[in-house]
Image (tube, rainbow, N blue to C red; front, side, top):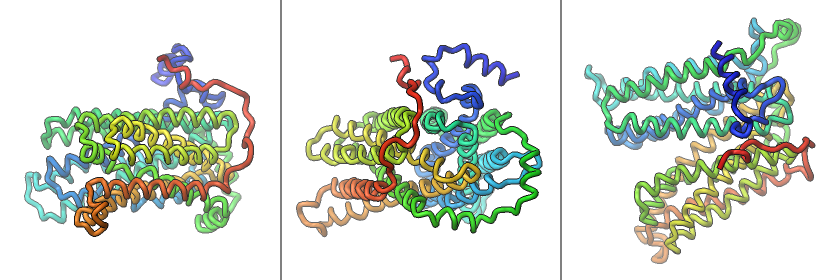
Length: 478
């Protein structure tokens, strides 16, 4: 009944107010597509909670050492390489109902729920605020388990969810579906981040428990709505699979990675992702320390990055719908990153805050083009029956590259900044901006290497021919 009401509500809205109306197809109507995209909202919410809100709460309010917080946040990287295996298993899963993706999405959901349910208590024990005195190792192990399980759950759910979206979308609507999935992820991160910030403004242990466990329940409910009647039961598929030998992951992976095009694609994805994410934890400090911007001014950088990403998503979907090669779109994103980081670098000697903001916007824009382009390319990288493997490999590479580059960016800034301030790099570089400048120049170098790596993959001309259609985001009011 609820799904009927939701469908009716969507149908009554004018098309011009539905920016992704043309992402729907006969087999995947808009109400069903929007419902499916809700799993990305929960992924964004969990990411914002672990990387943003709890990061600050653990260090400031709970007094947990920064090195331990960084270790906890990085723990999900340990399971990132498993995304390829998860995608493969969802390709070949033999369910009694004929389902492939739903069991893995639901398993990931339950893992997220379990991790978030125990997380606030684990953090209170870790910080020594628990009511029962316990050895420090117990709190460390419990908090590590919570972060690890949530990371495993969100990566499992996201890999299988994107594979299900690929199964349901047509070749023509797939670029718009990809863009919608990214928009919902971004909305989940930004919206939940703002909500968590308001709810924890007056921090208490009780408020921490309420917020994190509320997120656990919200994840469970939202993903249940997202999955409802998305994948049809297919007993015929089960019967057909019984007559076939069970594929082996090692053999399938070896066949996939032996393809030189696939290897180069994964390297390009890793390099480009690292290039766009290395600045993640140094951009706001750069604005405050070097350009002397206020806290409110640096907080607006999140809005600028998100706005640039949204426009990048929209433009990528529009261009891809016209038949452009997705890797060409990704290359344009890497190309847009070069003037973006140049603007950030030159904003310091020019003391131009406006130039810094333009650079931040362009970083989001280039990253949006690159992300949608590479994800769309991953959907076409493998035959339809093993698309989960390709998406899992893409997700594993992207998550690992993003995490390692973020950590690397912070370390490079600290190490090079210390060397510069000590005079080891010469008098000309003995400035506070030197550590930041090294990070941004390395990112530009990585973008050049990305363009070199991705160049041979770009096809001449259009990859697919689709009839001209307007993209809904262009129709947004205002």
